[in-house]
Length: 139
Image (tube, rainbow, N blue to C red; front, top):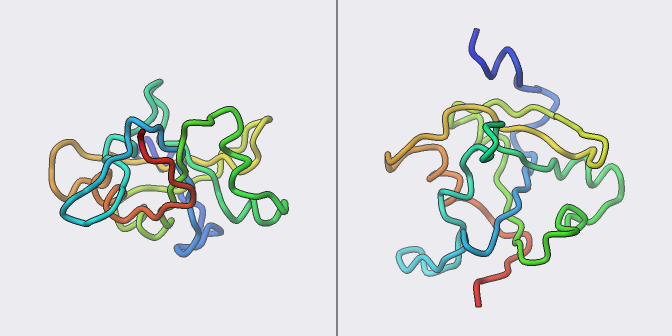
């Protein structure tokens, strides 16, 4: 068994079409001339700096609780909010696991190797395919 399947097993109740929301700090937002649009950098989709798996927020939980996605940005005024699908995460060998914490019921983990410098690394796929929920471009 792998670390992810042991600690963050994939939850089949989170559908492939489910949106996973990720807070993106301003320093990870840039204008991609090739795509002709603002997008997050691939570094925005790395595992957390404390060694934990990449944290996201389940939009389905927010919807069930009649909460606006902006609620996950409280206290993070300079952050944008991007969305990838659970299907994209799984297509890149990641597990999607609900991991609610006392202060945030929609909290979840995306576990798996995010890759290093490969053009097809999961973090690069996430960055290229992310859709903005809230975009705050750098000044």
